[in-house]
Image 1: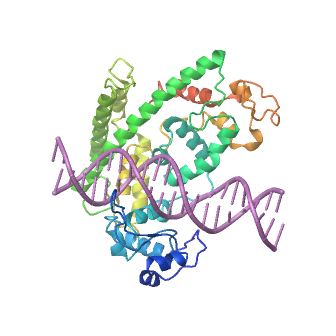
Image 2: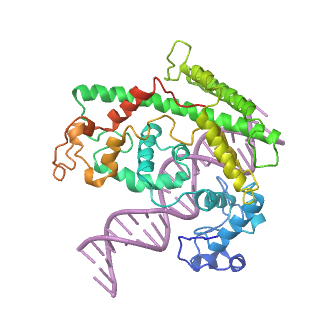
Image 3: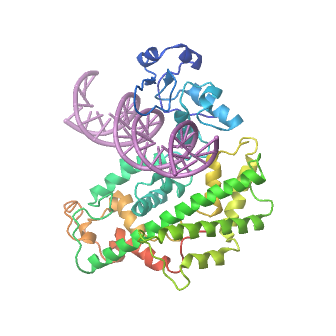
Length: 391
DNA sequence: AAACAGTCCAACCGCCTCACA
DNA sequence: GTGTGAGGCGGTTGGACTGTT
């Protein structure tokens, strides 16, 4: 196994680490060391004296990897002692989920990934874990870092508030104003819809996990023996989950409205989807095949996998409605291609940012796509006929 | 070459949610 | 219904790295 480590620190043998006290470790430059000193207030997660903190050493990584490959992570709290690590469970979990997990994609973000992040951030805000579910093999931490170090600055440079995704000068006039307001309203609706969907996902994942635990308690191959039966069950579970979410969201405090003559359009979609969409079947088959192939490597079902399985069942590995990536390519191109960064004032009205260096005129409406018009296009063209693929 | 500033990202912290007793 | 512990999430930090003066 090829292992690459980000830290250039020398790696002391773990045995030696365990023999040193905390002060010695700190002096030697092996990161901060946790002490147990909480006379009052919240107790730390690392409630043992001398737990190591800071950068992980290759030896620690190997221990963690070996233990998880053989036994699964089980209880994170109990894992460090079982694996022979002087770390707290939380630290182990983070190291695994953000770095050691074998299905993590590392390296430069692709154009498409950047577009997805920007658009999902406009919809979901700083819900990095939710965004990460739409970017397969990227961790929420990585996305968060990438947003904070690259994308946020790029938006700000364009005169767009990275929080609200609106122009910082707030100057919107005439029809653009109306369009933006409409888009904002639609977007708010979409965000609420996405929230409901995520909630439903969670419920389904839990139900799926419970079913899996009951039916196939010891195998990672939790795929149904009869896919059709299971699919129907999953769809019904999804329907119930959605109805729960819908009921919650239709409470007096919710602003989400359900339009349509059949008391909400989703049940209709659910009904029509009960035949299990081809694409979802394909995803399921593909993933189960992948798992088959990795049988020798992964002999356990982690909670994370169970959760992800729940997501896969409802086909949410990809952006949740068609065209999400492609429709707004125009405006994201402005962000992603430094050479083609247009003067935002041409789209937004009065921004002065970049006017000096970007004086070239942009011709035609197509090139003057902006945030809201791009997303508005998606809303208007996709939503009525293609609600989120809940199943 | 040294000093400084800016960037990047792994890891930590504290809070929140959920499951369970 | 309540308390508790484990896990998850988002914000923040610290130090290594890189570029500039």
